[in-house]
Image (cartoon, rainbow, N blue to C red):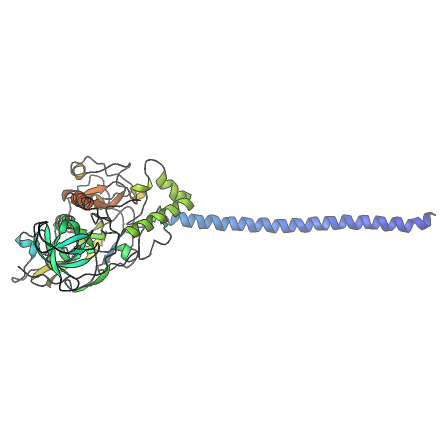
Length: 442
């Protein structure tokens, strides 16, 4: 009986042993696979950490360096050493502007007391809000037409608060209230450097992060051949009183060997909304960017207005400062003017249009008046402040501009803001054409 059952028992014992061997084999194989997985995960984590460290390192904000003026935006600028601020007097160590030798037959408009570098006659202007065209200067003149916001014209004559203008058809002539209009800055301030970044490649970022659909994109068209200047140039609309104030600022800068570099004055309302939308998307998706501008005391409205900004009124300017290296004298019509052909940008704490507290000139949000800057009542110790920025703040304050606490580059001209607000100017249009012509002496 046992002889018949033994083979069966042997087979069962063999099966048990085989199962045990299989379990051990599978366990070893599984352990081997798990070990490979662990190695892969560890390598992936090391790569991710390295990438993150590189990314954080790239969040440092590059500073402006130097480049030669070509009247166009040509990309990022190299980074020099930031100037020290300790015991810094913004009017010391300045190299006076030494213009080229003037010919005896050269006529400069400002020599005769002009409040601009070139006269308004022959400059391009725009109606900033719907207004009447009249047959004589003054509201008692007979209305001969109606002009729509954004309509361009050539300025022929000035009388008080009124310009006599010629419309783009070349025939229609009449008078407009220039308190409801804008003037093209390059036509009357040709020595200023114009580098309108949002009409080339937008520099807008926040906490170093790009804004989707905004950063490095052309947000609007604002460049054309300018017959008055004889070259391609940016189109830069401005309230007329602010143009005169910018002339004063530029003369203060030139007397000390510097020049203004303007990055934006008028910004269309639709562009403003696009930037606001992109900022909201970034803040929603990026905790670092969100934390920088939602925690007290700084909020989004300090960096980009969600309503009508003073840029839509053409009553604010975004600008940097540069040391003048070379200049030349050019002629337009019966007047001469200076053109800066080479310059070196001052060092700044952040790039232009970095929308975060990194660009602030003070440690907390406050309204800053020009008198406070000139009286030394504002401690310019924000993260972005350099000696060059202190210098620029003084130049603009001396000309009556008010700085913005959250942006080292932004200056408001209150008389122009009040005038534009009274006229209900909101900037709902683009300006893509100029009708400028060389000026003649009256």
